[in-house]
Length: 173
View: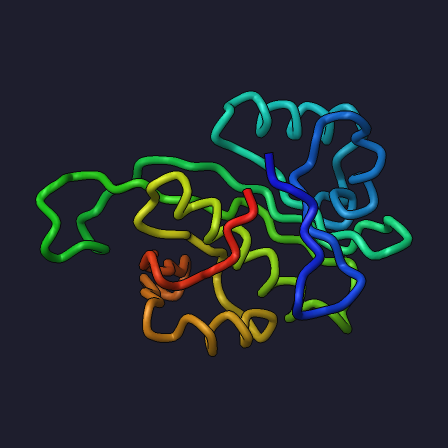
């Protein structure tokens, strides 16, 4: 279980792992990502995500407990063919960011960075070799700057960050 974490980048924000107690707290963010889905379809999606123990949802809240962003992830084995040139295994373990949603355009880049840093912590703790991110746009500028030496961009569609054990120091999981 991810401990609530008061981060050092933006005072007053808390990152925590979503506990399936009240889906209505996530509805405004999920409705932004999936505007044509009704409550039952959103609930079904979240239940499907949380069905597998290695999957999860990270939530960023402010001091007033308003949800500012979320990251939905799964941990999977993916083909190592294009990612690992010297690896003999056919597959490698990867934390895949399925959805990354932020409600505040002003804080978007910083919240993306905070959520990705926490996803990297989770990936490291689950012996993943990579974190797979959605296609990069301007919202990922801080991530690109911080992890530029570890970024692999395949066909400009999905972007991977190669996990190195020295990348992050915050291990509150």
